Length: 233
Ligand SMILES: Nc1ccn([C@@H]2O[C@H](COP(=O)(O)OP(=O)(O)OP(=O)(O)O)[C@@H](O)[C@H]2O)c(=O)n1
Ligand SMILES: C[C@](O)(CO)[C@H](O)COP(=O)(O)O
Image (cartoon, rainbow, N blue to C red; front, side, top):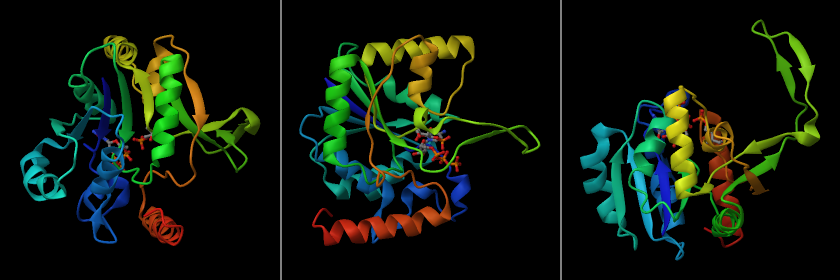
């Protein structure tokens, strides 16, 4: 079984918007609906699991999910207190351990079908595969006062995106180990690394942005316009 676990259980505090950022509209369509539609278009997928803030579950199902009329059934689960907890709740519903799971941020609506396929193929070959892009700025390490303590070799740096894709049993085991040892991280690849797994990479996509701060909405609008001109959206 191939399952997408889409995490959208956050509060979007950095966006500073009156509604949680996953529900903000891009050209009349909520960001999260766009993300769901991208995965719904993937015929290789057997199941979509969506983690949402618990208080939003009923209203989202009635007002957003049912009118979307997706081909896939979307299994809703309550999110947790942090992203890692939301992922764990999703993984509990991701089917048998001999399957594949794609863990994706609900606020990355510009994920292309070709990237989903590349991550799936990478995970099938290796067990753990994430999309990454190169850093274009020089990367500094700073101390707690903001003083530069070093410059990292940019050629060895990659910025991680989602969908981070794993053998289901592998990433479940990794999350169990992380929970038992109190390890927390901002992505699932870090959890797999902590558990001693080798994580492979495929080229990510600069358009596959995580909508995080207000200025990202302008960037998202520009990507959408370009995709329309190119006949993608
Ligand atoms: N408890 C949480 C926290 C985050 N997420 C999800 O993880 C993804 C990436 O997280 P981020 O961009 O940091 O979202 P928020 O936590 O909502 O934003 P912020 O940190 O600004 O509050 C988002 O789709 C978010 O909804 C989640 O499912 N459960
Ligand atoms: C998973 C992620 O999108 C990979 O870049 C990122 O780590 C999420 O980070 P956040 O701390 O939830 O913003």
